[in-house]
Image 1 (cartoon, rainbow, N blue to C red):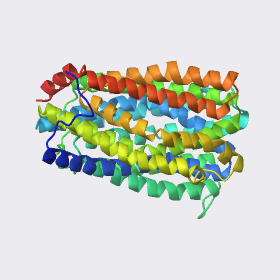
Image 2: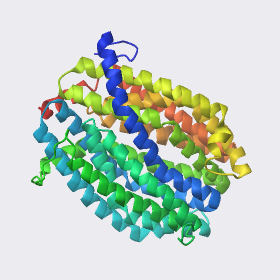
Image 3: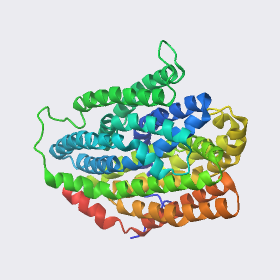
Length: 462
């Protein structure tokens, strides 16, 4: 059966109720994402005004962190999809069991990943061979500390997704707010040496981030055990191999997508270094502006995933399809407004992260381009949220990897290396990737080929 985003599957009252539900879920998720992004953005903004070369070094270090985060994406995606469907089916015992396994996996995975901090210097020299010694030293110092703090990051990411799966987007928002207020204060104090702290530059930024995440992880554990939607038992549940397998079966495609995408971004960074370190610095600033711009669409995608999963688990297919259209419309409206602001006033957004005139000049055109692409990004997040809510996590992975490795990287390399278009050429490749990826997902949703997967996860949730 074919499904269209242009067709309404709901009556007026149903559409109104679903829009309300989406906004109730999406607004805290958007706020949380804004705050989560600020954990990285505040590092970039403060370091950009401290020393743009150190900001660039920290940017390369974060590219490595994103690769390791792939396993956390698997656990968080699998847990969120399973909890949303089980919650919709009214199976609270299964919700409780999944929540406990999310705790187990977040702690174990975080501890294992923290050992990667021992190899931080080797990782940077291997993955960014064209970077200079100054970047290597500052980047590895930052990376070592961030990786040592992986347990706190793991708990925040996985348990946040667990709560969102049950429709609670407010608790992760509270956690992100607390962590970010602390992080901004510590960033300023530790990077520049204020309030009695020594001036530590990149090391100070890393310590501020890790301390903030430790505080956030403690708060989110407390909120999880007080959450009425999940009603987690105080007594730990028996470790279940079959449930672990089910979480990873659903989450692995998202993890592979994240890993392939993050590794592709790393390769893309090396392409940008062909144009010089200043081009990469301008790119990092552009990416931070992009992260600010797509937050509303991302939040709506989270809400679509959760609500589609809840309706699918409750055997309400028509309503779950109606959710997608309503979420898409809201995402398009918000994205269009933000895109217009970025396109018209790029310098205003760029100046958040640097006061270097050369970087502002180089980043202006790419930032305007990302403003024009907000409608595409809004569509991408809405359709991706729909497919994941139905349990079809494999197709977004395939679409993302094909677009990255067959569109973005080849196009970007040719335009930078052979046509000497610098940052502008690289971003043409990036925008072509986004348009192609979104088109593939749109076609997948329309085809209805995800129905068998949705039926299967629905049956297991009851």
